[in-house]
Length: 304
Ligand code: PSU
Ligand code: MN
Image (cartoon, rainbow, N blue to C red; front, side, top):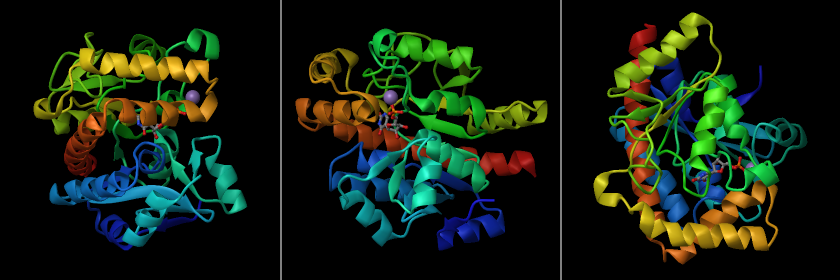
């Protein structure tokens, strides 16, 4: 088994069988600017604690896979420049070579499973990018959801992605895409992407039972729970459209490719909306942390 470094609070929670929620770190290093990235990371951890669970932010520091970070580690990561972005392919290489890097949704799922954590909260997942029919740019997050038994709570997918194609790929991979408390698939900054979600559940208990049923059936893979942004924080889709179209056009014109695409688009959209997108982003991650904490508690009950 891989050597994990658990934070003291995560280790105590694991020993007590208390609910744990994993959190990713690419959102900190590549998804938000300093200092809001650190403020958000701390606020999200506090939401998990306030909801009665224990947060475990995942990152690789000098070749060690950390599940749960101390405040000084979180602060260093949030301030660091040129931190590697680690997905499934990169994580083992970073561990083997003593590097430091932030984990994407895919890599955080792998770490969560290794630590025995069944649920993880983030903002948006990676998916099928606009223009993927030419670029073939499809995030490894989708395949990971098909492989690794962790429930990922997000706020849907950003409209920087091709949402219908993202849903098609998830369907092909057999990943349950579950809208929480509504029929429509949410689109990150807005509560609806204008199309229905394949599945709907209304309680944390049902979400936990559905994950337990996958395990009982011997099915690998996790679940994608799409939790709509709180109404008061929503930015209507038409207001985001111009910024997203501009950012996508700039990315294409400048030949941005590979891992750099998502961070480039997030940074441009932040600038183009004068920070409004960031406020909404913070509100929805906090909201997802609360739901993930409730799911973590129910997961313990249904596996007792
Ligand atoms: N989408 C967002 N915010 C993010 C990311 C995606 O709205 O911060 C990050 C997540 O860590 C996600 C990763 O797992 O980007 C996906 O990158 P790629 O498309 O290169 O797989
Ligand atoms: Mn990609």
